[in-house]
Image (tube, rainbow, N blue to C red; front, side, top):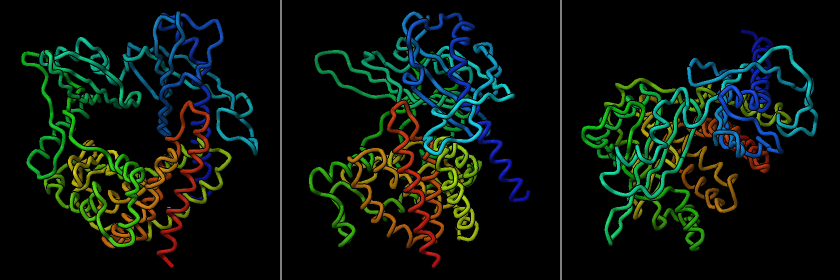
Length: 457
């Protein structure tokens, strides 16, 4: 395909993604009615009450909205993805899009309305009856959770940790023992499509024979029915690296000394220990189906970033071109066992050691550089989440200095920049300041790619 054809295809997909996003809000009143509810008659800003937004470029956009009192249900799920389910209703919307973005435009939500000729089909469902996650309703039902995983204890709290409509969810159930001495325990319910849950269980069984600590699978009560789509896990000990970095900074133990003298910081393992953890991944992982790395889906994420920050489309396009050159010309290394989502939130630490490796969904054959780049890319964007994460800046230097000695530094920094780029659209939320966070992530991605260019020259 020629460059001009690729550009035209990219523009077309971005336009369709924008149309899908704009179509969500006007679809809500009709979907509420079709699902047996009552559309809001008074003032209610649905955008301000959006709980989740998930963009899969080229496939569609999904969201979750909180409904006003009197609707008949509390939350409404929406998606422009193709869904065939008896639990959904669907409407066609002719969205309004801009003919030309205004120079001051910061997001698609603020674009001038110009009607398009192509309708967008928007499907809706009453949450938690996600049409692609039939087990979600069970995982969000307190009596059911108590019955299957309570073991006679009291369910103190049931909360949503994460939810990607139509894809996956994580619920945290906090149980407390009966009697005068009350002990709490957490169970994490990972909800997915049945085949994905089976694959996750297989990965946990595979890791049982390794030296790497992972959460234990918790079976439901004896004589319980089979529960496809839910994997229950015990809580692993430890805290995430970002938490420890913040605490070290607050206690004046910021890892400056680590950078200058290579002395370990109390409570924080050395970068070499993180590499050693990857070395411990069992060879049997190579028999699993390969999963694409973050950078392998770069085209899709570029479209998502462009949709989130349309006024920066030229910068994003230029960054994409630089990344394509660097990714093609650098040494990715050979295939090895990989975690696939190796970053600060998925690695728990305790007493200066790695205490658990979480989220085994992406285990499979891959490239070491992608695991390390995933780690650095996520570490680099931590300061965009808030001032409390500024200590991650120096940690990035520390880890990067060690990681780039283990693999091709051009590939490492380029792929770290690609990971940061994939996280731009994830900054979108109901908080108006999300645009600033997304722009900060764009700057971080550019700075990481600058490092790769520096290594070339």
